[in-house]
Amino acid sequence: MASIRKFIFHDLRTIDGYIDPPDALVFLSILESQRQRDLKGGIAEIGVFFGRSYFLIKKIAAPEEKVLAIDLFDLGNQSDGVPTQYQQFIDNGTRLGLTVDEDLVIVGDSTKLAANDIVDKVGELRFFSIDGGHMLSHVTADSHLAEGSLAKHGVIAFDDTFNPAWPEVTVGVADFLRESQQYSAFCMTKYKTYVCRNEFHADYLAAIADAPHLQAFDHVETEFLGAKVVRLHDPLPRRILHEIVNRLGLSAFSERVYR
Ligand SMILES: C[S@@+](CC[C@H](N)C(=O)[O-])C[C@H]1O[C@@H](n2cnc3c(N)ncnc32)[C@H](O)[C@@H]1O
Image 1 (cartoon, helix red, strand yellow):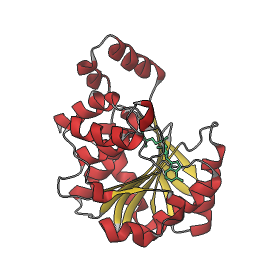
Image 2 (cartoon, protein in one colour):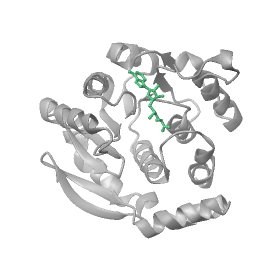
Image 3 (cartoon, protein in one colour):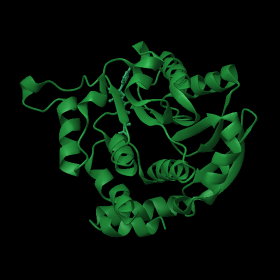
């Protein structure tokens, strides 16, 4: 476990991308609670970029578990001498000792996929991170893709919810929850909303409340579309302290800030 915390507070920063320690600790807590309850299944992510959240998931998952990466991978052009997005993603895996299984990478537009494209590769999913296209059409398509490929105990992590820079993400998630009536949110952070099937809602709510890695956050009870949600608040003084510690090159100590 110490090595996963080291990965979250040190190695994650070495990969270009977006997930930060608070959500990384939520990913860890959800995946760990599933493992403790023997809730099995594949894992997938739409929107890999250079692999920041993907390699976090690989690090947490057992070596034999299947983690599917889906991205357009259309950034960069080898002719200008800079490795393409895809090559940088693969290289990050090699550097971190988390080699990518290229049979489990889908290069293309997630909105064109069918649930079977996912289930055939990794089985029904226990965890699906959605961080691809951020317009309504993308979130609508990606959430239906998730619905078709999730195991009954599966969790969807939607990125950039309630971010004013991407207002349609929030609309897409709300539409999905209201139309399906089968899913509800159980956890929110500054950046992400975590959703599961209604019959697992109480279990995941309890998993978040009891997670040892999340005790450093304020747990604020709120409600979203009729479901009880724990909002994890990361107070500003701690965020500042974490940033200062890192800027001083003391990333080895930054983990202590979140104990
Ligand atoms: C914000 S980045 C993902 C960040 C990453 N999850 C992280 O934690 O660093 C968004 C990614 O979504 C990909 N993307 C955008 N639209 C997509 C689509 N329609 N299908 C698949 N991937 C898409 C982009 O290529 C980009 O790499």
